[in-house]
Image (cartoon, rainbow, N blue to C red; front, top):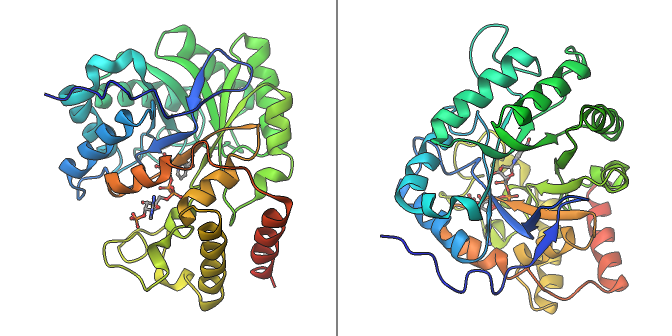
Length: 332
Ligand code: NDP
């Protein structure tokens, strides 16, 4: 029987999520990769136990995670039942809907029909009574925002989720949605967007918009899917994301130019006494507006490595400049 480590809250730092009552760990764990049908359930179980033992109280899923879609929620459910259900009140569990989930016109995007049915199906697959956060996974250019907002409001009022979140909304779309939700009395807890040294779009307005609206920010793929780690510095391991069949990271993306920047970044990390992954996470967490860095992992040791970014030293202006110059050089 799994018994969580007694000292699990001693080393993690928790940040307040916007202007809300919720605090999230600086490092959260996502189940996008490595929780599908072809993944090892033993490794997945080990990762969730390790994460919780290290103070990671937030696990992030979505209806479509797998493959196939739905299988990450099912695997999570089995592991919850075996290990984590006694700790349900200590966990923030999120799921999402917004991408293609079932055939026909009602299995995608942002209609009330899709969001309500998908949230209910996700709860059944996860074996949970409620989510802590339910996200609209991406903006829908066709459904009126009022309809999406009112469906999210309904999900809170009907007890299916405690809070709602938005993901992949641009600054203007997010601002409009925050306003609608506030008017409905369902303040949005959090915004989830890609942010890493290699994907800096949130610096162009989104971080400010969220901060001004009192909404927390959780940054997904802070390690750029594994690029911002030592994983690829000496070739492409066959058990890595780029070495496998993930459509989201391919060997071709690891160009000689990118590799030489990664080597330089790794040198800066070493001088700071960090691994490259730890430095990439500390870099995300340098902004107060950022609540949590949402990592993925393929083994427990990676999670152990990543959490050491918590409470690391801040960056000198010189270090920040060196990093900016290296990243800028990739655009040339
Ligand atoms: P990361 O950028 O953190 O990449 C994770 C990968 O990095 C791991 O699978 C592993 O690669 C590698 N890695 C992690 N830690 C280490 C380490 N310490 N040393 C070496 N390599 C390491 O995040 P993901 O792209 O996986 O995304 C994280 C989460 O964000 C998802 O699970 C999901 O919850 C969320 N997300 C949300 C999206 C949205 O639209 N809202 C979109 C995408 C993600 P390897 O597998 O090769 O070992």
